[in-house]
Image 1: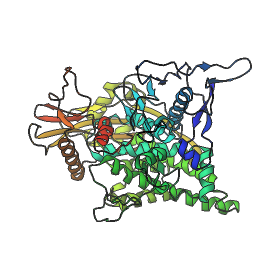
Image 2 (image 1 turned 45 degrees about the vertical axis):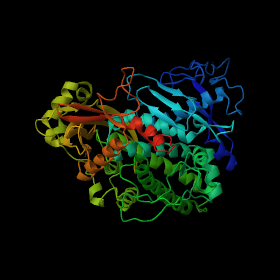
Image 3 (image 1 turned 135 degrees about the vertical axis):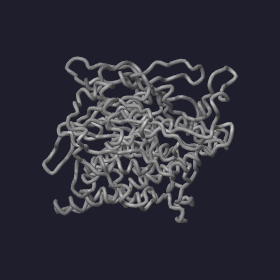
Image 4 (image 1 turned 180 degrees about the vertical axis):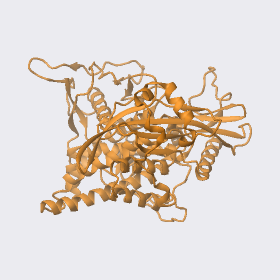
Length: 575
């Protein structure tokens, strides 16, 4: 069944100053059933009364009648974007549209799974009054808040009316299902990767809107290389919080020169240093997202020149077509790489290598896109040099030649036996216990010189615990454990090793973990498990838990706490 739903194009402020309509329609066609709420098998909108906490009735589902083939949800007035029924349906549509983007056969090529043990992602469009929004694994939910434009104003900003914010938070939930170890990571770049991917998810959702593409390109003369509704994340939210000029309407911007180079003393347009602190995940995320936004700018400019030359038209007239093609190419690069990430703690360089591996495995010829990516990673000091980003792909690996992949995917015993026999290939230290993750059998669509081609892969991940010194003073243990691992991407038909990626175990990443943990301890957010108990005898939800056993420390819940930590620091940011 196909269901038509209204969906916000961006946020009310962006639509107003760009002269756009607030909404566009979206057709949902991949769900098993539809219930009032809206509710499907995978997503459920729950709207609560902010005073009593009682569950309110959701938008009613209206199945098609007579000869009609398209259903809809009852929204009394689709022009009244602040009405509850519109809010419920629009946030539902945006969450599903974001999920479908990841599931497309030229991206992940498979249905998403959540990191929690339940089928439904719960969506709370009006969770309470707070300038925030966040994803929380423990409650299986996306929570969107609202807040007044001014303390004395009755006008409210609803984060669930911002397509950027909804896509961002949905991106967190999706990435948590793909790479669940990042939720309990302590490496700042692992946490920053979550933020960067969430921001890039918002960017890709903006690119997916024909109305927004058309409006932005017409107002910029066919360019995306300036601050627009594409590069600026959560403009309405950022404007209300910052009270700054229109030139800096945003929460974060992807159009930046942020770097990890301590020798860079330049300032951004807000007067902040471009060199960011290595223990601030939000600031770090801009380094990665800024690098990748530069890549999509280069892709767009290159395609404009090519399309204009081939068609005998101006670059402006082909800018929309070039962006549609370029955005799809960019989506394939940044999303397919997520399956290639090694399990456990990761660095920006790990993600860069994953992008290169996923792209190179399918396009072995030299690539301008990969060149641009390497240039940005080295320029911004996310990698020391180009050689550190190189990945060997499409290798003949003897250990794979006689592997029965059907059994390998289905049988945990077969997977563990393979890993134990091939510790050297996988980088597992001798005598160390390891954990085999569920194997993925995926078929993805690739675009080659010969045309479209579907490639079936087995994605295999194995992880183990690495012990390292802990610089925190007592009562914290002198050593800690982190999770690291290896990913193999195996061509199902040829048994070729499409790529192998192992966690970044550099001293630099360890140093950054030390910085992050000291920062959390100094602020009082890191608590030993036995101390993190409230008056009711239950574990506190407002701290990061440090578990201690046998002289070792494990940390959990840093990602969940980031929005609370930021709010405590006076930085009111959505997660």
